[in-house]
Amino acid sequence: MVTTAGVYISVPFCKAKCTFCNFASGVFAADRMQHYVDRVCDEIGAARDAAVKSGARLPELVDSIYFGGGTPSLLSAAQFRQMFQRLRGEFELARDAEITLECAPGQLGDETLEELLRLGMNRVSFGVQSFVDRETAAVGRLHTRLECEAEIARVRNAGVKDISIDLIAGLPYQTRESWQYSLEQAIASKVQHISVYMLEVDEESRLGEEVLAKGTRYHASAVPSEDESADWYQMACEQFEAAELGQYEISNFARPGHASRHNLKYWQRLPYIGFGLDAHSMLLTQAGALRFANTSEMDAYMDKPESAFRQISKSAVEPDFDVIGVERAFEEALFLGLRLNQGVSLRLLRGQFGEAMVQDAMPALLEVREAGLLELETDHVRLTARGRMVSNEVFSRLLVTSAA
Image 1 (cartoon, helix red, strand yellow):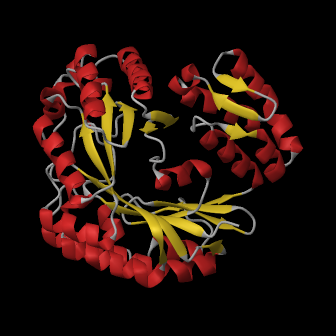
Image 2 (tube, helix red, strand yellow):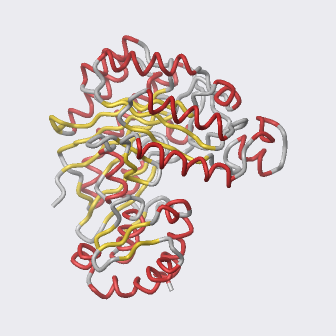
């Protein structure tokens, strides 16, 4: 029985919003930030009572906390102290808990860093995106390559044991040569973890909207093709592997023993609870699981007298509230597990969901295997390198078949 949970705290504040960003984040005044922290603390305090009313199991012990955003490092030392005090009042924090802070290079003050280290933070994830200044400037990032290198050294010298950086393939003006430079700089930084994402082009971001409209604002005409981005992603896979940064998930690479324990919860269907704007949660129940999410509208979140979780406990018709039964749980276990390079154990699937469900999924698995996107053994299934490149296509084939 699962006895631990992860906690995600959304901090949607930024100094400037990147043109490619489609997250619920933005630039807000300082007094708004304190009101928001107060609101998050109220939500934390309501969680356990709401879990009981909803029939969900909210473990007492928390072994991962992840401050994501936005740029959480913009909060003050006092505001982090306030949130930790509330968390420790509602949960028991494991002695070896992984505590992660996302931040933009150059936006983590000394006082805040010192306080977070005192509170137990042991992992920092930097949104580097590129080590080429022209590329970061084109999408509204405020840092330079030199600032990135200085920040990595600063937090390492301060005692942060695990450092991660994000890179994006497909930024405006990016070329194969400039991407190679970013890969080399990332490896040379000797960080323990690197995430690589291909630029997402959708109408929810300013850059994506302009690219889809074939416009020129936000340097949209300088965005590389999807094929180029895919080639560069493959370059990253090969070069990080050679540098002992093993790929353990479609977008994530780590040195041995340094995978993100918090993010693994998402792919392994382990319980986690999110607090704050647009935060998502998954908690186990006797019958399966509950998935729910807070609103992505700041005014609605700030003005709502009760947390989304409390609202859920009163009504089963909330639009962001999903009851996950056996069939949905099987689908999730399959496609979330396939995101991991180790793949999915069919033996464990049979033990959890029964032989019939595995057999029903077998024709789709065999079809995807024939396409060269899947390795299928007697008791194990995993994506091939090519399958990871087109993972969304693989998952849609599996889900369509299972729903038929």
